[in-house]
Length: 122
Ligand code: SF4
Image (cartoon, rainbow, N blue to C red; front, top):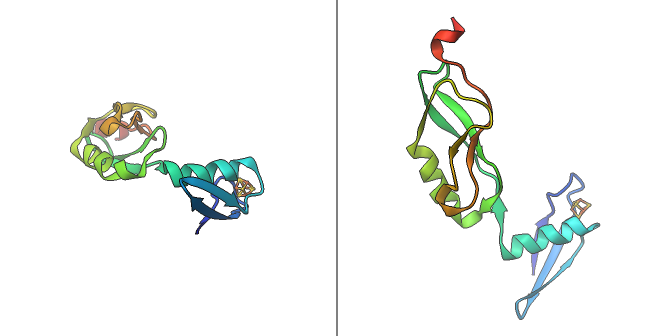
């Protein structure tokens, strides 16, 4: 048996999950989203990743980035390695794609803010 807290809404229902012969029985959910969350966690757990990328010529040294869709948990290390390899030149726009299909996950790494060149802020 495994217990999980559903994070699909602020209610935070406690899910109890039993596995038998590859089939999962989930209890404790108050709605269908909890059932889907529990099943996803057991069969293909995924997470959004947030990080930063170094900036060349910007008024800040780094720019925040994230995956534009959740990636498989077992790919987190590979994705972070790809993020840590790159730099972006200022100016940068919010939503700019810095890495397409990062580590083969089908997710892109995108900026979550805009960033001006250093000389534009004086
Ligand atoms: S099961 Fe439904 S009500 Fe409960 S936390 Fe998940 S989404 Fe919210």
